[in-house]
Image (cartoon, rainbow, N blue to C red):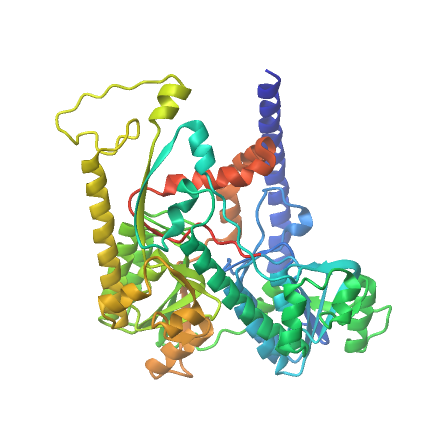
Length: 589
């Protein structure tokens, strides 16, 4: 009863807290709305663009009217995201705006994949061609955060801070032992020795094939990052690699000694450095502007141009239906179809950031991409990951563009179900009794072992799906099925490796893809980029997520550190039907 009482207390407390937060937010919104409506945003002379990405997750795009509400706490348990497109737009505007003299950069604890960090870094490198300064400061840096900050002219670290600079790792979670204890037996069907998405359910550690491919792409991505840092910091590559391999930066002073940081300073000392660069007195305030406000001052270019390039942002898992926050087949097929039929849309770019998902949903989107290709140029820009189903929907494109450190490939397929008979009968004392008209009327019944006939049917379906997948890639890439199979089998590649094997055409980011498309339609200087799907206003998104976030808070309160394991098991719900999905969720740290 005490446990139930605690749960009830948490629920009631969260409910009251949420209601009060909503009332508070409405009050704040009124204040924000009244002030924004009466005051036009402008850039003051001698200003700095402040890019504060600490604790933020970089996604492809956020609402244009995103506000930084973190100063009010986080009443909704909302993750504060930063849109890569918005960030790049602001950096580009800062480059050409005479009132902005430099960028103050906080990226120490930014959360993003390597390809997104690369696009952000490239925008900062381009900014530096203006001759303006970039100063970075943080109390602590992750590997990815430092990768971005390393482009700065000056990098300052708190005297008691640290830099995580010891190479990349990726750790998988395996559930075989758990399933054995609870009495659940996975039934696995797959094609491709590297299609290791099912391994967490049948093994206690990675197979040799899975370890080989993971080691390969981690090495390639780490080498790429080290070359970039080496060039920016003026440190010989071999020396930097040794620092990285042996984790020689163990104390704050080590970062300075080895050249990764300029100096160890406190925040107030960094402010003094910035004031010196701006030529203002020590007692004066520094004029700063954030990404959202700076983008409001930017003038839209070629807004009346009839040469429009549609960029369709496809981010998340691939599922059927019309769900939000994922790549749902009905919704994205409609967006591609709409762009195909719009005469003002001269080219289509699908920006893919997906580990894959449902094979039938991938096929639906593939079909619309193939149909669009018949009437106008179609391109794919790969983000952090465009693998398995993410590659499936990319295959029809005229040109595929990926970053060197994009994760892609994983051309393979699998199916999975679970036999819970032992759990039900022996562990829980539950029995079942089936009455049926035909031998397979209870096909794939999870309360009993599968029959050989059932296994042969599902395996046949998986093998047919693999052949279809291979044929889609072969047709789109102009390769023979045999050539595709040599680089398929579910193997994951970096963008750099994929280009060497014919799965990617050009290395670059979204801007590179847009430039290629503009050149193709003969509109290098006269085009307008339009983004789909339309983003919902930030407050509408927060309100929709409110109920889910309350539930998450309750679970986190009860499960503690086990919440991560819960999320992994919860993903099994989305493994319905035959899947074209990456091997687990690859988290590089």
